[in-house]
Image 1 (cartoon, one colour):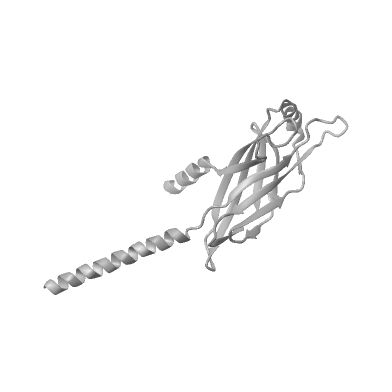
Image 2 (cartoon, rainbow, N blue to C red; image 1 turned 90 degrees about the vertical axis):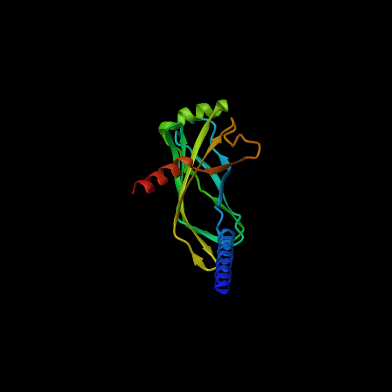
Length: 193
């Protein structure tokens, strides 16, 4: 009886150790989320009466700091809003990004909504304009040759503009952060079902 007790105890220790190893292995392989930032943003500073249409351009920096996983992005939708009004939006086509890699997506010019442009140009000339940026996409991770399921992500940020029509921040870049509202909405949706 004493020998079976020791055997069961030994077996329990082995199972516990294997469980701890599996947990450590899983934590080390969990992919990190990509980082998004808007850099080199440029918008006109005044309204021209002869050409009321205006455009802006920017560069989206996408950073994959994960050394183990590459990331596959579906189409990325970027929306720029002034207060509650849509200034402009565009879609960056799907692409894939290798491990521990920075990708710069140079976006061609984006048309500005003419209904919003005059009010926005007025605030830009005073150096008080802020654009709200929203990024929505779906990503898949590939770790050790195995692709994950799609993960929907939504990031947002505030783009302060100076009177020169460029980013007001000293670093000349605005990092986008994961939307807390999106997490609440999706978790509420999932728990309701």
